[in-house]
Amino acid sequence: MSIDNSYDLIIIGTGAGGGTLAYKLAATGKKILILERGTYLPKEKANWSTAEVYGKERYHTQEQWYDSAGRPFRPQMSYWVDGNTKVYGAALLRLRERDFEAVEHKNGISPAWVLKYHDFEPYYTQAEKLYEVHGQQGEDPTEPPRSGKYAYPPVSHEPRMQQLSDAIAKQGLHPFHLPLGLKLNEVDRTLSTCIRCDTCDGFPCLVNGKADAEVKGITPALKFPNVTLKTVAKVMRLLTSESGREITSVEAEIDGQMHQFQGDVVVVACGATNSAALLLRSANDKRSPSQWTC
Image 1 (tube, rainbow, N blue to C red):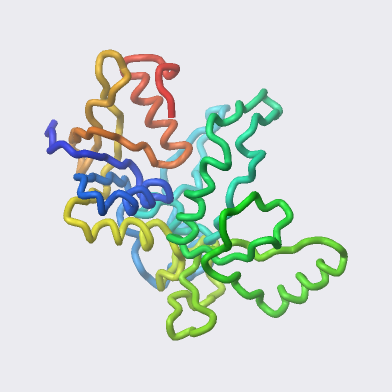
Image 2: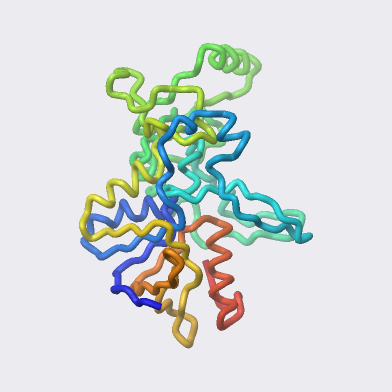
């Protein structure tokens, strides 16, 4: 097993979390390694094919997961540079204040977060600027407090959608423009990357019109010489000190061989399910999962 050079920071995953963090820290000069189990999603006509995208699930992984009864199923997961944001519908809503509080549900209570909405609000504002989120402050009655307006105007409704919105408003309800991360300029379409096609949610964007983690995070970060991206690099486990409190290295499978990468700081950003799976695999190696926190 080869042990590669040490890094100041290792980021596992290139989705919304990992891609944004890479962008934010790229200019610091720190030696950064980004590990991604997938490769770049190909640009092809099938990007806009309903039969391929939905009928054949062309861009979802073929791997099998198992439910609580041990039955296999194919998850709707996408392993690409950019993660699942490569096929998201560009909707970027903030969590509400109540989402950070304790929540009672069928199987018990999800405890309250230590950090609250107001702790995240400045970062939501930064992220909305980075991802070019178009929206209209004050329309959504459930909208949490904001420190400023959206940096970009709301995306105009299609004619039929505008009719529906007007009719709903006449009923005393409050329709609102969904906050969308699009590289869209409706004032001057010659300056717009987004062409307002009819293949957005669930589809890869053939013209990079979505403000996704590759377009807005990874690609700009890789312009810095201190940032390295390794694709088709599946992280298998995190190796730790004897106490289990420090990560000493990251073990990844690349081209059928195992590699170890050392980093002063390791960020696990490979999605809610796969981050948990990685921590459990690592914990089961030496110690119980209770000794790990995410």
